[in-house]
Amino acid sequence: MRRGYHAGMSEFIIGVTGGVASGKSEVTRRFEALGIVVADADLAAREAVAPGSEGLAEVVAQFGPDVLAADGGLDRAAMRRHVFGNDAERRSLEAIIHPRVRAALRDICVAAPGAYAIAAIPLLAEGGGRDAYPWLSRILVVDVPADVQRARVMARDRVDATLAQQMVAAQATRDQRLAIADDIVVNTGAIDELDAQVAALDRRYRALAASH
Image (cartoon, rainbow, N blue to C red; front, side, top):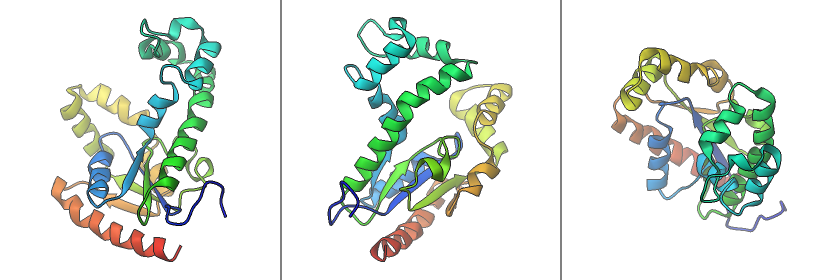
């Protein structure tokens, strides 16, 4: 039996990912409405370097005390300046944060009540995919064409086309995400069209989890 696993907990775990402005949060909200626990990688990353955490202490040891804000928390703007354009520094930061994020997501999912659980991981393709998350049972990609992403980013963040393109280009390509997908939600239509897609996936995942 896997360490930390007890009967009645979720060993069937779905990784949900997608590019910027693809509608990942709209999809995960619908799973939550169906009673599914969603563990959020962005939240786990913030908690990994929360004030007083071992993760924050490691960051300070690695990068120096100037990355601390006056309140003792991480000064994210200062941290961004440290790693911007510096791959070695960025990898050092990721080596501190990413293992903690992966462990936190898995702990939340395994402890979740219900037939299955979801780990929402925006940068799943960029962060190593299946190799980095071998405990994912399936990967669900929320998919939209790049031109739709750009238009949504411009509308959502009130940025120009050049910056929107840079934000899309900074992530994995659409093909790279689709290459790791077991399941795909196409989110090019109206938001309420997601309801039927998510309901169908929920039925499928419950059946798969029961036979897992």
